[in-house]
Length: 249
Image (cartoon, rainbow, N blue to C red; front, side):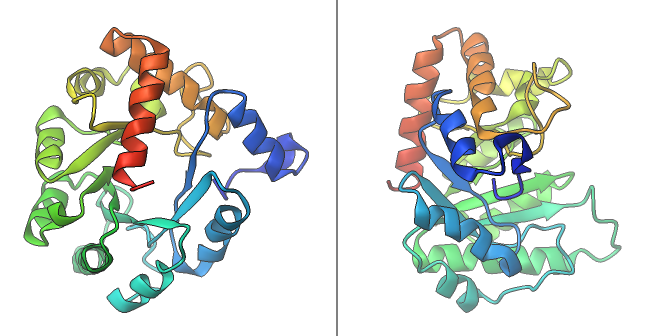
């Protein structure tokens, strides 16, 4: 959320939040992707009672500082930090022959999360088998978390659910090409899914191709309601309850 261009909001962050609230969004999680800019996600969380943040390093940020377990724990002591991540594996955007650096950083995040008992935010792309394997080896089920911006198959979703993880659906689920993902969205238990925007990326239909923003989560909710044959209001109630349960709010 700290990456959104505020030009269309008169360079006013409060206007961004107000626009989202007018579209039925009441809580926000600003996800950290590197520790160098952790202050940028912490600041809005400290200024707004309905904004929270995480701390972590995205798996594509090889040039970023790679924090040790204890450093992640120290940064997570802020009361506004409700999760560890974004962490995980990404073999699509990284073409290294040796991906051990990603594996090592991923394991550090899991170990930190277990030590402080905060859930994980997991990114996985073209690496689903290794992602699940490492989560299993490190006993990530002790804290669970969310498979952020999920775009995998039902088998992977089941493995994640078995590890105490929630499945989060972004604008991708609204794309006409996302047939397999839409089947996953139909099957996930009502108490184990979240909805998100991944702002400022992956804007949902009918805003696809435009800059994404938190207000557009309503379009994800509408699609989920259609897929699950229930009301928009029910999706709102269930996803909000799941968010609060997972992040202990």
